[in-house]
Structure formats: C-alpha cells, structure tokens
Length: 397
Image (cartoon, rainbow, N blue to C red; front, side, top):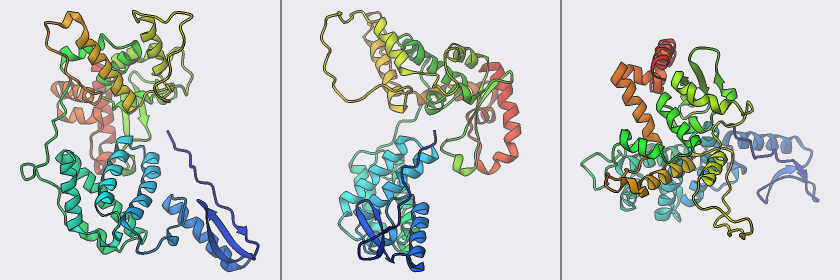
C-alpha cells in the first residue's frame, strides 16, 4: 500500500533579528535577510533538495568530511522511505541495516571519504565471521556499494570512492570460508498435509491459494476484493507495488478455478477495501477449538508484549503461524512412529507451484505464471505470457 509522506513542508520564518530561517529537526538553518530575493531563492533551493533526497534535513548543511557513521545514518534514513514506497520487503531494509551496522562498527569514526576497496573487503570478512551465508554477504555488499553511489550523487563523498568500490568482486563458491545457504526446495507432500491439518481455516486458505497461483506471501496477505478482476473465466490481480516495479515490469496473478474456490468464502463478508485474510479470525477459531478455556471469573493474564493483532498478516506473522502448525503436527501423538515434519516457510510454496507448472507445461510456462520474465522483454512478450498464463490457470489454478 502507498506510504504516506511523513515530511511536512518546512515554513520560512522570520527571526527577531530580521534573518530568515527554517527549523528542521530542532536545528535552525539561516537563509539571509527575511523578505529578500536571496532568502527566497535559498528557501526554494532547500525545498528542492529535501524533495530530491526524501530526507528531513538538507545535505548542504552536512560537512564534506563527515564520518562514515554519520554518512551511513543519512543513507539509512533515505533507504527506509525509498524502499518502503517501492514495495520492497522489510527483509530488504533489514539487510541494508545489517551491512551498514557492520561497516559502522569497523570504521564508523573514520571519514566516509576514506572508505575504500580494502575496507569493503574487511567488511566482507566480518560478515563471514558473523555467520552470514555467501549469497547474502554478496547481496549485502551490493547494498553497501549502492549506498556509496547514493552518497556520491549527493556530494557527501567523492565520486572516486563509489567508483573504487566497484572493483571488489563478490565471494565465489568454494573460494571462501563463508557458509553456503541451503537451496530452497518445495515442501514435501507429507509435510504439507500434516501442517495443513493443524492450520485454522484462514491460514489453510492462504497456503492453498499460494499453491494454486504461485504468489509470493506478500501478494497473498495483501489481497482485497477490490484488487481482483472477476470479469473473466480466470480472475486476475494486477500487483502495482512489487520489487521489480521500478524496472517497468508488470506483475499479474492468475486465479483459476481452484484459486477461485479458495477465495469465494472470504469474498462474502468483506468490504471492497478489507483484507481477505484476517488473523483475528484465525485466532478466534484457534481459541474456540482449544481444549482448555478461560473461566468467566478468571483474572486476565498480564500481557507479555505490546504487540497487537492487526487486520492482516505480514511476512513474519505468516511464517510464525506456519512454524506453530509444524510444531503442533510434531506434537501429535498419532505421529509418534512417523518421521517428524520438517520446518518449512511460506516462500517454499512458490517453489511447489513452480515445480508443478514446469513439470506439466515446461520452464517457459512456469516463468509466465510466476512472473519471472526479464524486464527488457516484458513489453514484447506481455500478451504471449498473458494468454499462456490464462490457459494454464484455467486448467490447474
């Protein structure tokens, strides 16, 4: 959903001594004599800079020899707003924060302009020590390079600093002590069925819908009735905010008969803008089916945290719900002589869907359903992919 801009346009004020000033984050920025063309010009230039950077403090006021910790904090403030508006996941912001924190821990007190390839390689080594896998380290260092590119574009570090960092290559498989991540594989049928049996109706429907259409988790729990085009035999959902939208790539979910059957019960009592999958309904069902219930005169149990249940799931709450169901399945006495259910996460369901489509229709069909076509050929093959996806979804979705 679009993010509301939290920055208000700062007001041009007059100081008691006649100077014009703007107050930002408790600091006064003086712009010359109030009422003069010079003050007006500086004020509009400041507004233009704030609009470009997305920050709430002008970069022009920053010293050119700022420390690395100060520069990274400025970039992190920018990244939080930029990537949230772009629709990137919280995990991407966490990845950026982790690598910036690592760099600040090592060199935070030094000048940002002195950061170079050797220090970036030292950050790589520190990330290995901290237990990150090789592919994640490469992605994190890529984020750090983008950080310095942004800092250079805003004249906080020389452009030569950002350019020098590009010579540092990523870690290669078999050439480093960094651990390799386990490949993401589909969930086995036995583990999937054992977990589904322990899920409330709402979560079971989310799992079934992912299997039917190959959607990402965020695309599932953000679904609303107003997002679904039900005019054709195959329903479609056009996702406006997704991680490759900035590359001009379209993302469409195709909902065939199986997906439609999953969704229909949730469309009956929802407003157009209500989220289809409400965690409060799952909690209510779990409470009703519990073996032990609270007595009417039983005092309330003190809350263990300030966390509240909202009107929709997020990536973490969805994953936690799956983990609880896996634990419940393994605790079932009927499974005492059966192999334990392996822990799995919702993104694996996308691999289940991709495997099924590829097996039945080939790799190109899986790319059409899952939206993996390259951005530079999207316009050329958009209709071809759409027709292919509509046909496949009508048969298996």
